[in-house]
Image (cartoon, rainbow, N blue to C red; front, side, top):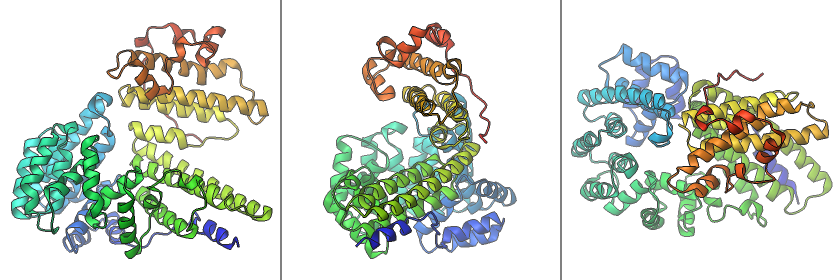
Length: 537
């Protein structure tokens, strides 16, 4: 009766081999320095989408890929493909430096460096379009880089030019989705672009202004009533492949209507593909509820998703988003085995022990995998708040000295707060992590599984950084546009502040007279300095 349980555990093995694909072929040629082979594969791509995917693959943060684009454009400065590949590499590298936060939540030196790289990329892309006016990846780069450098009008000029030469859906959606209010555009401008150009699109039949605007709204992350309307537009079209990015995004947010889930799932199955996101879309607590009817099918879908996320993380090791997705899938995997295999229906005691043993091995492998990837992430993106935030949660240190690991993690979060320009939520991470790690260490000390650290050391590593971060969050929230309590709840999950309450960790520190500087110094004297992070053993 329970044979399928062990089959599922086997399906979820950490050995997930990806099949060879065109991008793998391209990257092998690139890492071998074969300019001619790379250009030939891009030029001979079967369609627009495939060609764009190949060029985009060369934008990845892998140092070998970055060095290839740099060497290629140096060797062939009049080659449109080389210029375009380098432009996209500069765009993506700058985006990892700048991050996705608004300008006021980004450290000024990072903004300046990203702006320089964006500008260099734009110059290369513009030159590529002059050399090869029909090369769509070059045009895409001009459209996008014009927006991020604050030259929205230049983006519109390029959109008009390329739509006259090759009227295609991707160029239109790229422009409309990036000219959002957050990037100096407006919903009215997005609507106007879709109304004017959608009818000209030649590579998608029956493409309409409404579909165009829905794609732009969803890709541009515009919320509120406009997003609700966009969902209604794409719902009956969920079997369309060109909408997959938007549909999968809605599925992950649990916002995809049931009818659309069915259409999307049927198309994926017809293509021999599966994904857990449509399965989980109707109810994010499905893994904890009832007995999932198709455990083996879910396991197969999960394995495919993890294989794809692993490949993405391998190819783009300096992008924290790829690791966030991989870690989320590992968590889904854990909940699946815990909730749907180990307990429902109840296996025998012998079967339970075997499953628990295999799950323990799987968890150990995953922790090691994320540790290795997080260390590499910090090497490649040492000034990315998102990268440091992820690494703080996943880098493992010596088990014999947990304080060393915790000191490193809190130092990483300190740097993240600087690079996020003291965004309240980022500083709040120091508060939350310091409290959690302090409590966990106290438990281990009581159980005799950690050294008996002196109070002075605990204050230095945990409690004084906690008090300092609480004081900084208090100061930020006191002036916050959303109001002090909303700011506090968003950043440290409690309001009013612990600094003014009794029976809190803050009051315990105060009652002992500890961390006097952190408690009493002016807040401006408590602002952080960048910590030089040394790799943990």
